[in-house]
Amino acid sequence: MNVFDAVRSKRAIRHFSDRPISDDDLSKMLNAGRWSGSSKNIQPWHFVVLRQRQRLEALSRCGQFAGHLAGATVGVALVTGDWHERWPVAFDLGRAAQNMMLVAHELGIGSVMANIYEIEQANSVLELPPELMCYAAISFGYPVDPDALTRPPRQDGKRPLADVVHWERW
Ligand SMILES: Cc1cc2nc3c(=O)[nH]c(=O)nc-3n(C[C@H](O)[C@H](O)[C@H](O)COP(=O)(O)O)c2cc1C
Image 1 (cartoon, rainbow, N blue to C red):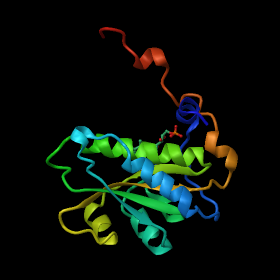
Image 2: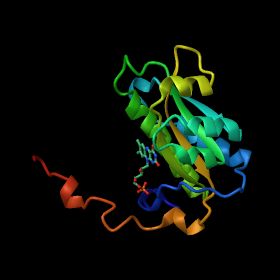
Image 3: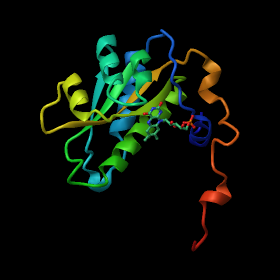
């Protein structure tokens, strides 16, 4: 799958089958995150990999729409240290997340983000040291319905190009 097709076809997947993710594939996905560009090349991330059902379930209770983590084959918590001091951190974490999800997509593995709102609770689930925090998490797994991986967006799912692109000036 080329990059254009991967970007165009990737959909959020929230229902996962029991098929395991191989260590090889997981390592490709994690490397894709690690290789991402970041502001000043600070690489402000740690990836906490979750496979234990109990911990995935506990993290799924840390965000209003994070329920899908409970059924993920693998969860990756995006952990950072200097969120409050450096505004581009969210941007950097977003790039790492997207790279991981695109490589997963190429491997036939579905994924979706979860915003984490209960920060203290998530930090405790992940047993983080006090200077770190969990910003968001990603669910990964083979989809229950393989066609869901590349299903078309909903009719009104993506804003038209003319609505979002402005040439030279507003
Ligand atoms: C920063 C970010 C946070 C998101 N948080 C959640 C979330 O908490 N729960 C969830 O189910 N989906 C979450 N999503 C997935 C979006 O809902 C999804 O990408 C969007 O509806 C578009 O669907 P598509 O990815 O299939 O095109 C998040 C996506 C992004 C980029």
